[in-house]
Each structure stands twice: as structure tokens, then as C-alpha cells.
Image (cartoon, rainbow, N blue to C red; front, side, top):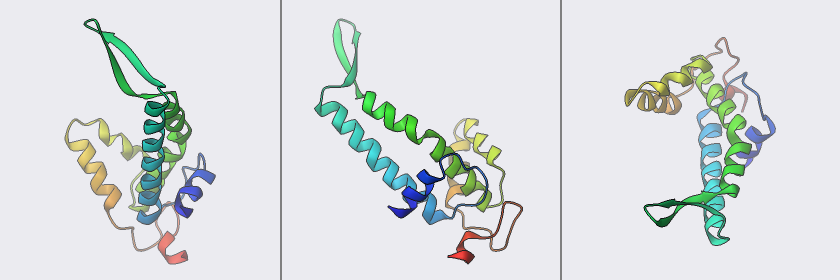
Length: 130
């Protein structure tokens, strides 16, 4: 939980480095919160619905889910950028996900890759300071 709170407190920080633990723990807690919002939307009947061929179809998510996603957008983007900095890549490398099929896997490989051992142009190794 401390990693999640650390990233949320650095709301729009795109500089520096984020170690694997910091990033993946944030992803874990963010996913749990999104899932809870999804369940809550469905329990309270706040999920969006639309008409399709005469039948009402639920999207499965509603305003609660969208609010949680919107509140986490910039912190999550900052976490990805700092994680890419940790492996020695520019934050712009995130745009690799726009390459169909290969891009998502390439980004995933970069996100699970170990930190650069020494200081790089984005700052000192965060593992060395903890």
C-alpha cells in the first residue's frame, strides 16, 4: 500500500526513476480499486446501459469506475514514465504501444526488466537508496 500512496502523492511527477516493486505494487492496488468500483457500480445499478436490437445491454461499468480511472490517469502515466526511465528509456517510449500486436508486448518486457545498475541520465538507481 505504501507504494500506491507514494505514486499517488507524486501526482504528476514525470522525472526520476521508479523501481519494479514501486510500479507493480501501484498496478496491483490500482487494479483492485478499479475492480471494487466496477463491482460497486453493478451492485448500485449505476452501470451504463444501451439499447441494441431492442434489448437493453449493460456495459458493466458506470460513473464510479470512470471517476476512479480518471483520478488515476496522470499518476499511472507518471509511474510508467518513471519506470521506463529506470531501464534507461525515454518516457516517449510508452508510445510503442501504438504498434499493433508487438508494441504491448515490447512495453511489457521493458516494464518487467531490471533497473539499470548505475546512475543514468534520469537519476540515481532507486534500489541503491533503499
